[in-house]
Image 1 (cartoon, rainbow, N blue to C red):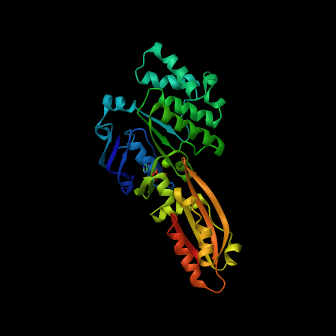
Image 2: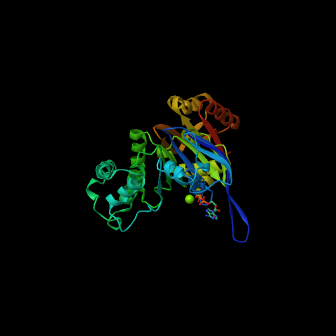
Image 3: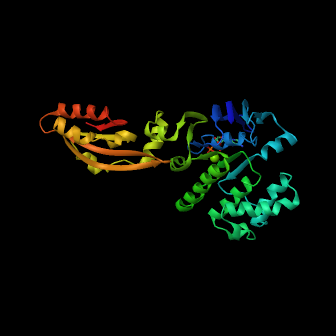
Length: 338
Ligand SMILES: Nc1ncnc2c1ncn2[C@@H]1O[C@H](COP(=O)(O)OP(=O)(O)O)[C@@H](O)[C@H]1O
Ligand SMILES: [Mg+2]
């Protein structure tokens, strides 16, 4: 369990000006979950993440990892605690003059492993991340995805409880990102390691996170179950992130020539199985024209999204009644115009 209580981080410039990078953040992260923190650049994500292993000290507040007050530790006790918290980075941070195996062995030596135990553990962990045949390569001889696998192997070799991931896929192409996210998910499931992952991409959150906090201007503006956040974003910043990700904007040309009511409808779970639109058409005599539709998979769950146009020739009230009928039977209806 990670408990972040009222954490603030201030940076003071040489001229004496203060920047509050993290502003009164409180979060609970349960053992074994994949917790995402999303926000645009400069939101304070990296600074917050770095307080979890005391690479950055909070100016106010406290952080407990498995009951230990991390923010109060120093010296040997802090080093000890850090060995139970792995970390990976956007740009991998590998040692370029050492081989893949030596990069991983280094972290085990630092954690006090006996010499004889290191080589077998390195072999085991490289096999787990799919790099068994790359042990003697140097980082420069690897692709980006392979470098991140080395970063992951190094971070989890010492059996940590927690893995901190700072934009782990932001330097990778889409396909490679997907394989790295799948590896992180497997590590979480097989080894039970709690993952805290920060990203500026909602797609990353959608793919592997259980819960998410949205950060803006140093603050957590919204947090919750990932599916709920996609289905019902509350804060305007979250709404903007979600609608950008779902990408449901209609071409301007199409919008200009539309008449009647344009609706965006979300279907969740059971509501997806009811003939809501045909009922609306039959009961109220409206024409239903489907303009855009997709099903988004958020983790394992489906979220259906349709953009439809409702028209009724001589009876505008029928459209309003049809909208109410649909609203009562689906997760969410947003009237885009009309
Ligand atoms: N070491 C530092 N010294 C001074 N300001 C910093 C430092 N690290 C981060 N900041 C500032 O704190 C804010 C948050 O940065 P950061 O945590 O890196 O955001 P994010 O990871 O969300 O992009 C930014 O305004 C950044 O310029
Ligand atoms: Mg960052």
